Structures are given as structure tokens and as C-alpha cells.
Length: 441
Ligand code: AMP
Ligand code: GLY
Image 1: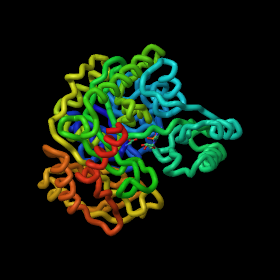
Image 2 (image 1 turned 120 degrees about the vertical axis):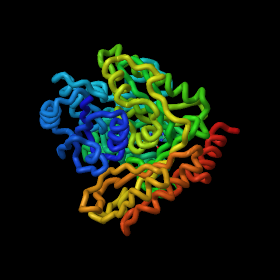
Image 3 (image 1 turned 90 degrees about the vertical axis):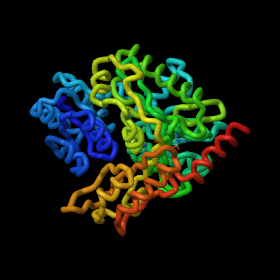
Image 4 (image 1 turned 180 degrees about the vertical axis):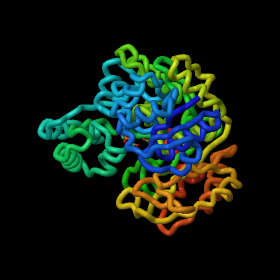
């Protein structure tokens, strides 16, 4: 099977590794020359992933039979629609269905209009005066979200990033004035609890769920600092998380199934990866956001333990013949830590060399996935984005964390940083304790 991968991050490196294990003949169109992806491909094209025409030409030129679209930007630009119009089936939804991620107001309205459980109180505004009077009148603590895409960095939370109602109003003004994320905001109720990610393969109707993962968005250890695309993540051997019950996972999955059903009924069947980010509150899981793609880093966790054939799953996604049993995962835990440039989240050190001893890392049992790096001979150098992910895979979270740390010892640079606390038993225990407290136990 000749498959086009679109995207050049750690997420796409994990996708490409899994496709490679399934014997696919892989071609990649990506914005940076990712060395981990390149070595698994028959050919690569460095191109802006939203350059629809060039990507389609490349796909035709290479006679690919199917495409896997990793990032959100090409989905928003309509790449899946364009590829499908030339007969290439896509793992990745149409532009219309991808609004689940690309428009936060579309997502909230869809849940509201179809009475799907898990929604939060919310209002949308493009006028500062109207927003201000709502903010003054409400008793809710608020979260401010630009409506459109901001690379995971536009959301600010009252009491964390924003100080009281005045702080909320100030940030709403900034978003509306600057036009980021489309110049409109969603103001939504702040949910209190622990976050988890549930991802599923979707074929328009059916879902094949993956193990739960917990990401860490804050830049610094102890969950402080600016929000980032994600600093690292872990998953447990039983595919739940230590603070999530099976029925809570099932409730989140039901929200996702009802969302898929609603999109299909509205004439925009969803095919691809659906990513649900939930806050587990005292009243059950609440939707924080949906993404129309694999999470990054979460893809590295789940694809490292994917037991079944990714090409077969992709064919079923495209053909509409998916069954949950098609996607199976080994009963192992994973811990992923992203190596990022020093200063990441505020001002990254760009162009710093990183030495990676891949042979030594392989001996630890951990996996490495390259992300946004440039290559310079044997060396890779940092860009302003995340550099590479290291994933420990073992029988327990604790062992996976230790394996990940052992492997990180073979990644050397003067100008990188890692959130070493991710997956450590102290931090996992804090999550469990927090959830006890939220549940009032
Ligand atoms: P997002 O980009 O929507 O994932 O938001 C970034 C982060 O902001 C999330 O990972 C949450 O930690 C936080 N957040 C977003 N929405 C809410 C909400 N309604 N309640 C509480 N925290 C939220
Ligand atoms: N890890 C969060 C995301 O991919 O959006």
C-alpha cells in the first residue's frame, strides 16, 4: 500500500513508524525535514502542509492510494476534501467536519443542539461590550478561548492565567483587538478536576477507541508556566488512568459516539482520528476540546503499543468498515517526555545542537520520535518548537518512567529542557489525590 503521510512532527514520526511496521510504502509531505520520518520513506517533499495544490500534485505523482493527515492546519485548509476529489481516501476529516477542532463555537453548538452529555456552559462574543456585561453578571469562573486555531496557546483560565473579572475582560479585549483565532471568543465555564485524553479511530459511524492518556500542557515542572502544545504524557497498562474509572471512560466514549452520529446526520461524516480532551469533574467527564487528529505527544504513547496493523485500520476508516477489535494495544504502560529547546513557551533557543545516541537509547527499550528539528550532519539542531519525544514502554508507569529517563541520558545538549516530573510516582499520586478531593472523598 502506497501511503502519503502529511506532517513532520513527533506525532507524524510515530504514525510513520506504525505504518512502516505494517509494511506500507510511505511518502511524506512535511514542513520540516524530520530525519526520523525521512528514513522510513521512499521519498519526501518539504512543503508547507497547507499548500493543497502542491501536496495533491505530489500525491498523484507518487500514485499514493491513501493519505494520513497528521496536523490540524491542512485539515482546516481542506486537504482531505482535495485529496478525496482526486480519488485518494484520507485518514483525516473534511474541512467541514474538522470544525470540531477548528471552531470552538461550532463544537459547543453541536453538543448543545444535539443534547450531547458533557458540554459546559458557554457563550460566544465578537463584541467587547456584550462580553463585558456577561462577564460582570455571571457567577461562573471563566475560561477565554479564541474561536479559531491558535496552536494550543490561546486559551487562558481565570484564577490561573487571568486575575479576576478584570483580567478576563482585558484578555477578551486583546483577542478581539488582535484578531487572533478569528477575532471572536468563546467564554466558557471553568471545569474543575483532572484532564484526560481519549482518542479513537473513526470511520464516519464506528469508533475504535485507544488507551487513555494524560498530557501535561504547562511548560514547567509542577504544572506551572505558560500553556504549550504538550510537554509529555503517560498511559497505564490497563488503558485507563489511575484516577479514571471504567464507567467514566465509557461516558466519555459515549459523548464521542454521539458527536460522530450528530456530524453524520448533518451530512459531514467524520473519518479520521477523533481526539477528545475531557475534564473529569465530580459530575463526570466534561468536554474541554475536540481535536480532529492525533494528539501530539499522545500519539507517541498509543502508537508505541499498537499491536494491530495500522494500514488495515486506515483502510477500514476510509471504507467505513471499522470495528473496535481492529485496533488492539499491548497491556503496557508508556511515559513520553518531550525534549524542547531551552526557553520553550516564552522564547526558544533556536539552532542549538543536540546529540542523540540512538543505539544506546534502543538498548534501554525506549523509543525516540523526532519532531521539529533541523539536521546538520550527525547532529540535529533545535527550532523554536518541540525537538524530540522519548517514550518508555514497560509493565507499569513507574518502570516506563525510569526507562524514559535512562534513555534521556543519551540526549545531550546545552540548550534543551525536559519536564522530568512527568510520569513520576509523586506527580501521578498528586493527580489521584486531587481527584479524591474533587469527588469529595
Ligand atoms: P485547550 O487549548 O482548549 O486544550 O485548553 C488548554 C488548557 O486550558 C486545557 O488543557 C485546560 O487545562 C485548560 N482549559 C481549557 N478549557 C477549560 C475549561 N473549560 N475549564 C478548565 N480548564 C480549561
Ligand atoms: N497534546 C494536545 C494536542 O495535541 O493538542
